[in-house]
Image (cartoon, rainbow, N blue to C red; front, side, top):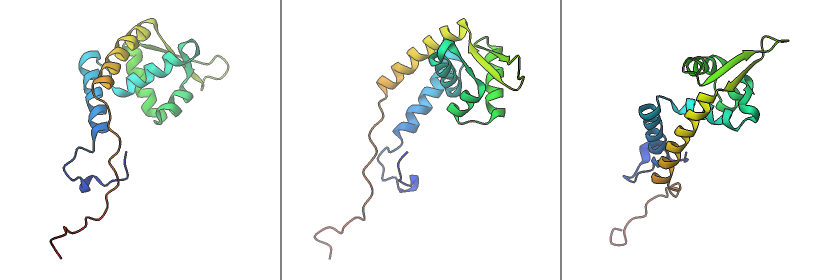
Amino acid sequence: MTDRNPADNTGRDDFLTLRALGHLHGTLRTRHGLSLLDYLTLGFLAGAEGGSAPVAELKAFLGESGDRVSYLLRGMQGLGLVDRRRGDRDRRNVRVTLTPAGRARFVDVERTANSIVRTRPVAEPAPPCHAASAPDDVR
């Protein structure tokens, strides 16, 4: 995001990143039935060693609360995309693992996301606003 105040928009579209993310989220919902957070979760697990990681690491990656991540994972587990297992020694530790169906879904979703990012590039931030100077003929 830029340091600019949205109320200071001068007519130029300064919200390209937000629009691109909104488009990505909507397309993922429509085509794949997944949210942007679902996509990020699948990507995190696909990049993790063995497709598995502690829920605490996923929580830190997403920057979400434990309750929110639990809710997210419950839905993804219901779709057969991930599996959650409690630790044998410490039941508080939970690992989440990408299932084969989750890996296949991620490949499809990643293809969609990449095509959107390629066709909707994000512009560089607008230059900072400076006080407008009066035209030469107005003094």
